[in-house]
Image (cartoon, rainbow, N blue to C red; front, side, top):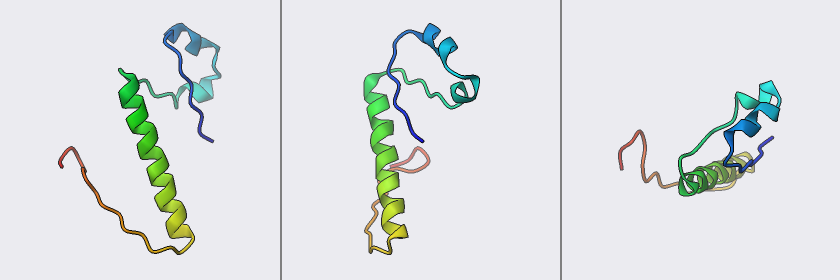
Length: 67
């Protein structure tokens, strides 16, 4: 299960279950969080395509910090 939780106040994390807190990712900017969401959904789309036996063309633009 994936969940998007947007909050500027870190104190609210105390009200989230401990097991879920371990998976929370904090980003320094809204743009970085959007980049990560785009990456996640791109990855899901690729995995679903392979699972369905589709022919896919995947271009890797950056890997391990290099373009």
